Image (cartoon, rainbow, N blue to C red):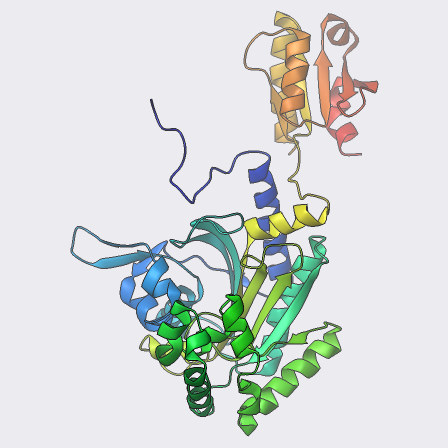
Length: 418
């Protein structure tokens, strides 16, 4: 038997789901443009070294989740697991031609080998924004504000902004030492993964969802207690900026994000209606050390990534109005040979006017054509029969309730645009 299912952890996006994702993407593009972000698209695969050096050798992404393969030239390549490293690489390669700061957005597929579950697929579509070249706290506030506005305008209300500062290379080492000392004292109560991470990447233990680990780390030292003057001042300005924007936030000492390149500001928008392991709608932070990690000059940056499929699940769980793309405006229903020719001409005329129009490609009864109009999601059926052709009109039937009106053949496009 032929296998028609896609690979495990992936899905076929078909109408109406594909229309909804497309609408989420359209709204993301519109809002990003309002905030001055411009579109970028990097290759779907990169040299593996970019993610190993940029994201971090000890992160879950690099150690467990990347789709890595060797091409015919013997080069190790990896499907894009996240967007920031690729955009920073592209910026560094073209920085002489680009403005500073460089404000970019992208809506592209990401690939991670994770255990598939609702809201966590091995291929998903991510809306991301990056501001590269500015260390100002105002850049952090702008990026967070954009994410907050996007979720709010989708009708999502049951979410909270979690905020933290994870310091930088100057103040984080002292915290790292204090955290390791604390974790060593409680190692027996930690899960296997946390015990393995404890020495190599201790901050990730704070993010562990295992209940035993969460009980232990509740009393762990807080990184905000170790911030130096510069990091503390930056964090104070970010919080003041968010308050000025009217955006509420919760300080979360566990919030460290999962990538090595993060510095200072870290944030997540967390849903109340999604499961504990898929509750993050949008996550991001500042990555002032990333450019140097991949071989470039010191270049500050801030950004976020937001999974569109997960946002759609949150919309549905909250019972908000499901986003939908523009429906087909009209389905032309032609009855008889003469009407078929006139129907094709009407479709051509409507499309030339920028009106979306469809029609049956075969001769079918009226009932069958109306059923096709319904399945196409058309707002109106434009019915052409012998009487309509004789009178120079079209019978416009509203599909929602069957209400009809006779409209002059030459005025259909303007009537639809009323």
